[in-house]
Image (cartoon, rainbow, N blue to C red; front, side):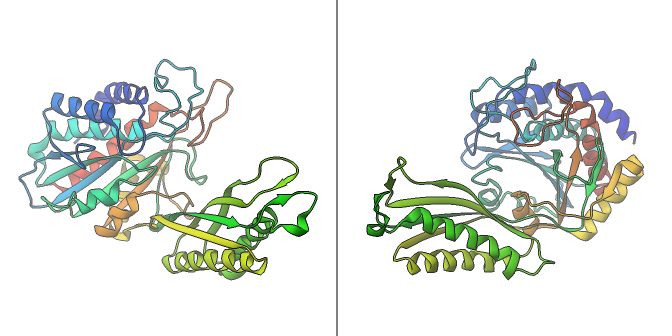
Length: 394
């Protein structure tokens, strides 16, 4: 089968769909315009679908009744709370909302694959299930979908998905990256409220200063990774927000801190959680203050199945040769694709395709000037349909 021709014949459609989706970014789990667009295109392509999560997610099927084998392809749908700064014809029409991470292209690539596979479904001895999922950025849509049995009826045997943009510096423009085992980190959030006793800045002896205590906690937290975690275990603890105080001469009663913790090992993750709590409370107590700590576990470590990753890599390597690489290093970003990969074997891969801005720079994911080189989309389409046809060949 000529996968390149199939992808190229539908390339303009893919780009057109991506630009339409780029204009209507929506956040978290409630994406009514996006969902309506997905449904409209699936109906146009005569692809069967059903709704999940109280009509917040769309699951499409090619050969749903053929349960001999089932491959799932996942595409996330949500955007970010960012005001777009690109001056393009397909600029976001929603204030303070932007597809600044490439999920618009994930959807358009998946929709294009839906069309191609449905037009050739007689060649597929099994089912392809497309999961259009909300809430990847936050609060996470994969876990509730799994709890609603999205991987059942028919039962998914393997799953595959990709991420576009510039997430791994081992890849040059236009290259595709696969990785065995751990590819992306767990993603957790912690908040610390330091409760002291406020007063006049000129009389600190009568106060319990939560700002000074917070500073000591912040510096102590940095020693978790540098002194308590083995140098060969990758992890990070970052305090990214501190809020406290009113003006130059008032010591406040409280200071709030907010941060993220990332690891590539669940046992290291457990240790970091316990130590953040112990350190914060102990330092606060030493200074006659209190610390309230909330640690929220969002996404687990994203771990690719070795066998299926090798399978998809080998197919991709034959198609694109030197443009396909095995990555050496994981990245510390988080992805809720990790939940699916804990349930069924599969793989997640990267396509490096940041677009040059008018100023000559390429801006990374989550930047207000982020944009994508649409001429590289066809590579992702080819890989997904090639894996589908090979996996479900009669």
